Length: 399
Image (cartoon, rainbow, N blue to C red; front, side, top):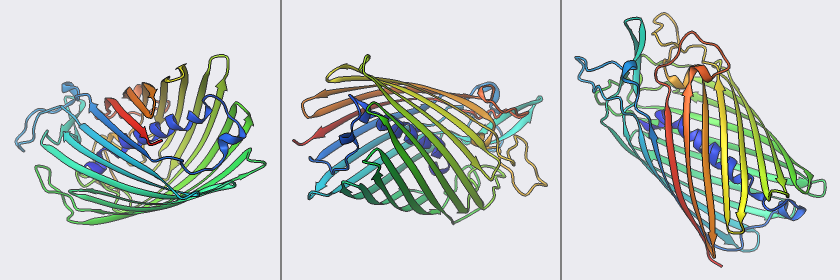
């Protein structure tokens, strides 16, 4: 069940991790050598533990016990995540990375919305959900002075959802390595077999697949600054409805576009780097979104780095979103992730080096509300979520 419920939060997490790592090359400065493509020289091991905790739903926005026997609990998801990575140099021009992730999820999620006393309220799924998920991925990469190329295979498995994915990506340096062109292609094939519980499920087994394309360019402005831009396209097809949400019915096809722009600037006087990113997203379900991210990478000591960051997100609702069921319409969803809203994320990350070790501690808070959005809507979803997340990590390099 979790595949449908935590993709949005996981997607934000993944984006945040990528954004945080991409500016590291700016410290202490940029040079042509910083863009040289070379495999890792040593074996590296890494571990991350994260705890994700959603705030309880406001009791005033939640229905109490009813004849169906559903729990009146307003507690929402708690997710514990363990991540492991092994990075191996293979000869002089290759590397192999193996990633393993496990998740343990518990809590409740919104089932559907309804009206009472003129107010829209949630009916929750109950607090009996307990699920485990395992992801494994391998990436094999070739390096050359002109660029690099990689191939990845991954599999995600949980009690009701299996996903297999394949991707190719590469980059090519031109203009005396001041310009880097990049591209990627990925496929996934997913199988959904919902579990029956307190919430009735109408399907036994369904499938969906996705194809994604990405092109990008990075340009060295000077020794301290880089500008990056990218364009991506994704098509999803198959069963895109959430089987665990009441009366949920979504189109069997979804086309998504995203355009991104990033800037990294090293500031020598402060021995720090500024990272700024903007992303525009559009799909044929009627959703437009904007994301603005800022991060400051501050060197405190040779061995200590502090990274405060903030992100703002806003989106316009899907064409078929409504808090009240539209029985005469072909499509309907009251999923809060398809509603109009805005969200703020603030966080702090600390990295400390000691010999062959790197220790990482981070924490962030996310808050969403329809009032934060730049698009207007007459329907505010009562299911909008706020959450906190903290992470502890350690890397070891065999030198």
